[in-house]
Amino acid sequence: MSVHSTDQPVSSESPSEAGSSRFTIEQRGIDHVPASERHGSVRSVALMWSGAMMNVTGIVFGALLVLLGLNLWQAVAAILIGNATWIITGLCSLPGPAAGTTTFAASRAPFGRNGNRPIAFCNWIMQIGYESLDLVLMFLATSVLLGQAGIDLGTPLEVVVILGLAVTQSILPIFGLSVIMKAIRILLIPFTVLFAVLVVLVFDSVDVQTGTASGGTALFFAGVAVAASGSGLGWTPNAADYARYLPESTSRVRLVVGTAIGGALPQTLLMLLGAAVATAVPDAVDPISGLPSALPSWFLTPYLLVVLLQLTALNAINLYSSGMTLQAMGIRISRWQAVVVDAVVCAIVAIVVTFSGDFNTLLGNFLLFMIVWFAPWAAIMVVDYFLRSGRYDIASLSDDGGRYRRVLGFNPAGVTAQVAGMIAALLCINTTVFTGPISKAFDGTDLSVPAGLVVGALTYWALARTSTRNESTVTERLSA
Image 1: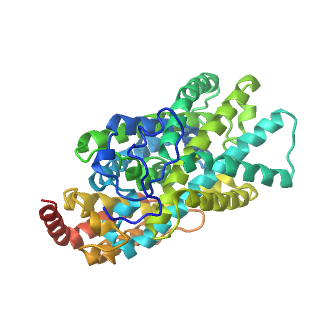
Image 2 (image 1 turned 180 degrees about the vertical axis):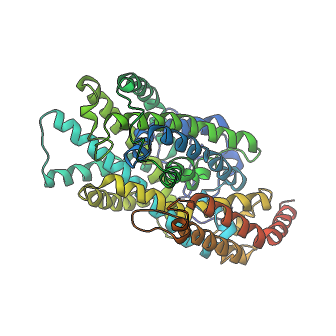
Image 3 (image 1 turned 135 degrees about the vertical axis):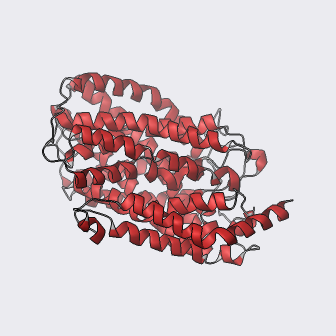
């Protein structure tokens, strides 16, 4: 592949193998991974997702559903439905081994090189949002730990702490995917043990009646949208980034199932735990600060210490993907430089969110508004993959040129479908900032997820099925 990247490969090792005995800095950006370097397995990808999802954000998202007004049983139903979208994440992983490149390099196929730029920018903004969310949680955990030690931070020191955490979280993604996966594996066992203890500690405090009177149909659908955005559907833009090192012959079914189970199982359990924890501290203004009143101090300190480490590893995944998204936008920047840029922006956003004093509302609106772009995008990526039978012209995804000017420049089918899907999602969304007219007509019911998915998929299928099939046939002939 001739995909341009300022990061050129210097090693024949894949992230699953590189640095097996030492830490090495990954040099690969969005450039194509040759067959000789594809030594990963579906099991390694599934375990990566399991390790990544075994973190406190699952508890945060589950708690958010109760804190926003759902009762416990509504929250449970929303969590189960929302996490079913991990199947879509598995489907969005398929372009990884098929094209041998990252998600938003492969995204050039249905949108065109120039048409892909604004979509990639939306993904970069979303990644920054998730990074900022994790950084705020890291700050809140640090504040509670210091409070336990009798240290009260003033505003200047709070800013210093956030900046220090921003620097710390940038170390792993600079080293690359191999080191990130090592860190996730190391932290998996202690975090699993702590979560098991947490279940025991909060079990007697769970109030199944919390919020019973306040939950309604409209709020339930909003909860489903939040749960989907915070779980599988929200990870679709990262999916192919971590599957691109798999051999092209990797079983499609195994990859989809492995990704779905690997991500959905731990995140579902943790979101359920988060909903249960929230019933014990229903008045908490954020998911961390209320913990001291619900947990014994002997457990709170080690729990928050591991939370800090786990969030650092989790944010490394977001920083890793967002850096490559900048490259896919055509910005001439190395992967490690992109990580630095993201860390700076993330720190600024985290400082603003921290001092806004309304964490739960900001988080809920962020998760809902992000659906507007990534629901139709995910649907288009999946439909495009199957229309082309998983065959990509590698040269056409490059920055340097290729055989398909339509693919390299502006693909009307993909862009039109994306715009149509985004409009449909906006018409059906319900947030504290904006409620779409269709949502209003249905008493505030948020239908943004199905609207974005269905309209995006059907529009692209209708516009692109002939041209994409023809392109796939030409690609097969050229490959032969």
